[in-house]
Length: 295
Image (cartoon, rainbow, N blue to C red; front, side, top):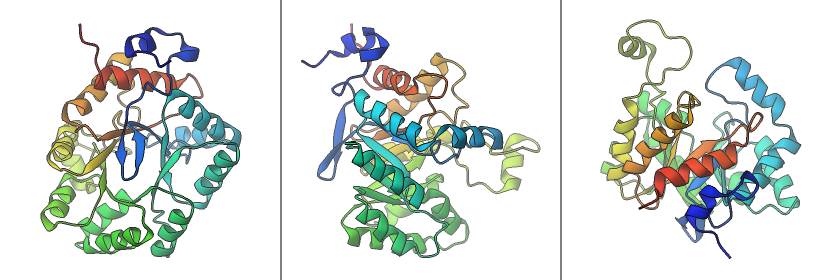
């Protein structure tokens, strides 16, 4: 018997998140969970510091990756978003050998010389969706070569996988919508991490060390999420942990997304469960933000 949402939120940690708890939405012929586990921590990309990135790499042994993926399935998260590189494909294969059934939505691996070949390899590994790497999309945009991204989307379409475009720049969405590109979904970052250094320093009022996360960016991208009729997978909701100072702050970050998200839009959250059960925590927060209790 499935639990009501009230029962889920009141349940002890061991059973708090159930397969029925996280709603699922259409993604082509599949139904994916609206909360998706992201792959950045597994790949050691913290977007915070070199120290944290190395800690993630040390923590995420093959065994710990599989443990996280199993925990996500237990909690009702049925989709994993991650890079389409050899390391991730091997982990995905190990997950499947163990009986795991997570759907995979893959990012192109921009470090490969032959991206069309990378796309076909990703598709052969069973990805249900493939999206053009947002950082590379943004590089093309800045260089006036955005049509090169469109060519890669055509390659994705030929594989039969759902076609996605990633970006950190709201104006890219405007352009693609205006031109009517053949896209099924967007990977939309709520922070514009593609700004040139001089623009960053102007907005920050001085020198900035590391990556610059500018809060006004969030609603600028979320407005595009609301405006497009394409499905959006929204990521960096917590600002790569910058909005994780308290439960209240995390909930507020998710509630902001919930105010703009369309019924089929999803949230992608990378999880690093070294110190606490982030899967359960994020399931609870997601439900509270997107499906608040009514009295």
